[in-house]
Image (cartoon, rainbow, N blue to C red; front, side, top):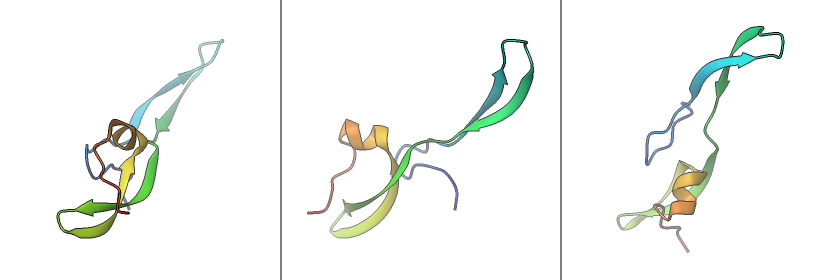
Length: 63
């Protein structure tokens, strides 16, 4: 399963970790995804969304 938000499409970001001695290594920053039961249209569906979308109110949670 891809580490991707189903609403905004946010995915992993890649870059370098740089130490004090300027040693570099590749690493990956994953989005903070949560599985949420949301109202999609008239149905209730389980979606994987990032916490930024949840805080912004882009997800209508199913009651």
